[in-house]
Length: 167
Image (cartoon, rainbow, N blue to C red; front, side, top):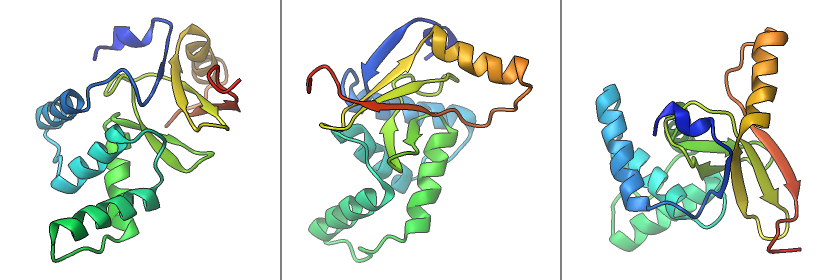
């Protein structure tokens, strides 16, 4: 994705409107172009986040990976939390996922790899999450950077409520 995609008004359910197979291919190409390792574990973690229908926490990911390894007969079924957190940090740093701090969970980015600010609309009934990237969100971030002189490392804006479908 290019940076101009972030300047338009949009909002998407983070678990819809994407082809997980294509997103995985794009992620691999992105990592290769940047010279960073998209290890098999990072790929597995990213795949689980892409395929999920709700935000996943680190322990959800550990359980899913251990179940998958158990059913495949893999010898090493245990996965340590620090290993998962390192994979999640990598995916965050590469712009492939977002962390929802209030839920301590992760969702795929609707515009992977493009630097953008986003607000997340989190339904407290069905746990759906919409990512919104638009001019008002950019204005808040620009105010923090330009007017307040704040050096932003990561942006997460979360709004909790009830979605259209649950009302």
